[in-house]
Length: 129
Picture 1 (cartoon, rainbow, N blue to C red):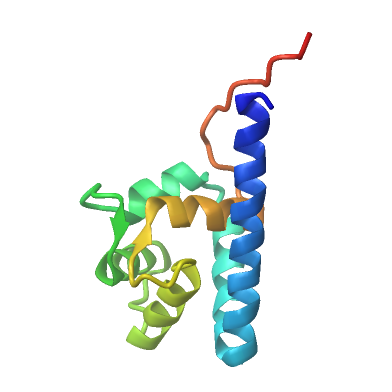
Picture 2: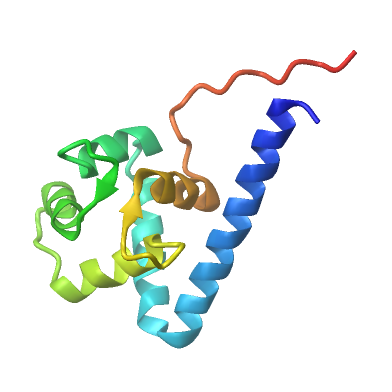
């Protein structure tokens, strides 16, 4: 298998894992479903790529998203300070592996799952001989 195919296979596995995680979260807390729907709508309507959104959220560029970073980014873009429960809900949706940390990798997987362009140029797979 070529590395391009392996990369696609890994992305598909991660996206399936994220979709399963979101479904589990929504099934236990319907409010999470509403938060996820609103967040997805905001992201897709922002006109920004995944990379641009990550740069906006991860203000200290440590590749780990803190609740305060997410809150500040949402406040800057919406003009309103989101309540703590909203941030906690979004963080739980984004924390796919439930380790208590939301990483830039988690965000990329979430963005790919909802269909948000990453903004990263990926090389075209080379045709196999």
